[in-house]
Image (cartoon, rainbow, N blue to C red; front, side, top):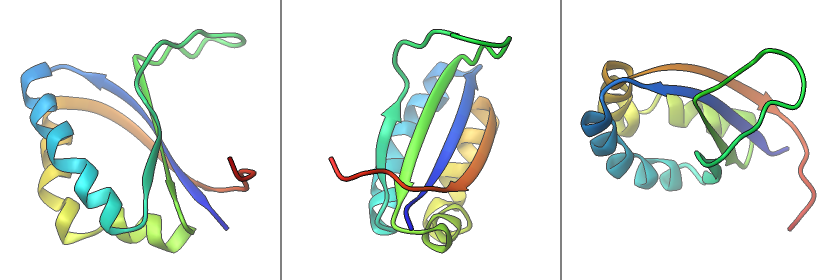
Length: 99
């Protein structure tokens, strides 16, 4: 079953984060992942959650997403992200109908 990494990102070093953004897509693709949402306009419809930036990644299954997050390929970019932004990440298994 497809699984999704949902990230709330608050960038505090834009230049450093831009370098991170250049490195990450290749690592995601190596694990069969793809971007579903990568930033963009958002609007709070209910509640008091006001995220700065949302990113959603889709992977073939839960294990593959976890492998990507813990991979050697993503280790250095992950450290870069952690230095340049405050991030909340969640991994969730779910179903999305085919496009």
